[in-house]
Picture 1 (cartoon, rainbow, N blue to C red):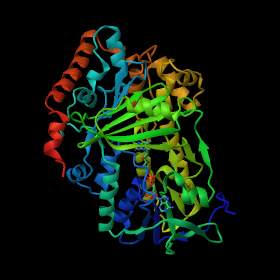
Picture 2 (picture 1 turned 90 degrees about the vertical axis):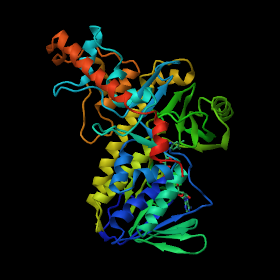
Picture 3 (picture 1 turned 30 degrees about the vertical axis):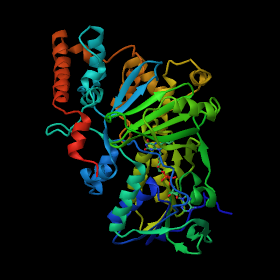
Picture 4 (picture 1 turned 180 degrees about the vertical axis):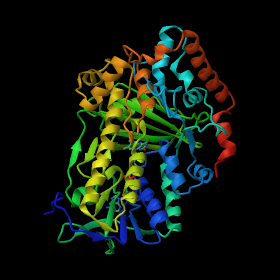
Length: 499
Ligand code: FAD
């Protein structure tokens, strides 16, 4: 019997085996083969018959950085995945039915070292000097006006929408160019050695794939980390009620907007991810609060365009693997954790896992390196979990048993503290390395109607005339900059034309 908690003796790494060829598998293959392909033997095993989860098409700006690290050319990538630009997420019906706000990737206004911009805006609003919070952020305003372009003097912070199947295909070509070997076949057995480490994968046709380090990218099946090594899973369904999804693809009926739509419903929410050639649609819901038939009817009744791919169901359990790296096996993607895609964070977490693995890359796998990896990843996962849970907790909705139960939910203490601090003082603290910075917390908390009771006294130091000028200059600059941008799809058609 495997004991996942038992430390291993250091072991050299020459052969890396990636089990699974979804987004996680091919992202790992691309990064490892580009960076260490000359010194490692990298093999990826995948099964066309099993296929991939087929969703995961909205990203956050860290993917742009990941591609830069791999030297992936943006225009080539965008054309290959039918990509569009994403400047943020439009949250519709979250505060209440009929209400909308945007959480953008941009920075609002200008901070003073002692106090964030929101403090100046809060005073300005109290004194009738400030307009909407959305007027002070370029990315947010560009989303509202459906505009985008790269700019010579300002770095627009953006991410992508992409076709997940095309992305895996693109990364496969990329990885193979850097020496990754792909093996087609179904894994039917995972062989372990005397220390409980994985030594080989056995495939249905009898082939045996041996390795020193195994990366489990087999999705929710978690064949290596879960089924073989027996690593447990921490369930987060007390905070995240949704456990089911239906996804489908439709034809585009209008030009793609540069943001993902997240539309809250009676017992969950729906996504719209606009690509160049089609739209990805999905409903995420709690099966305790809505039956599958009802979810299907609500979903199909609200999507636009012609259905290209019939809806397919996905079941999931929110939570995380107790350790994502155990012995000589690292779990990435759905095999390691799942937080619903409300803030499009899973591909980012895959990327973080890959980058951390590469940075800690062992000539020999050692227990301290494993412990460090798990500790950092746990922090990141809990931070993302808190941020997602917040959207539910601060909603005013009470119009169904689902929302009523959410209103009663006890949230993690870490999250309660952040919200109370903001409510009392208008402040948000920044923890270095956390994914969601001050701007994200403030845009969502103000967006969903949290009213801070106070603002920082630094904001009172300015005279009223200076404050009016300060806010007016920022607003003018935002509106002037956005006006120079073309409509998003006009820009995309010339920047990354469909192949
Ligand atoms: P999968 O795509 O399931 O791939 C698993 C691979 O393992 C496949 O290649 C399969 O063939 C292989 N495999 C499994 N068993 C075997 C076997 N026995 N033998 C051989 N091969 C095997 N993330 C985002 O960042 N943004 C989003 O907008 C987003 N939306 C999502 C919506 C939903 C409803 C869900 C469930 C997830 C979403 N995600 C999103 C997460 C995202 O889809 C995944 O993180 C991403 O696709 C990675 O999946 P994966 O590679 O881990 O698993």
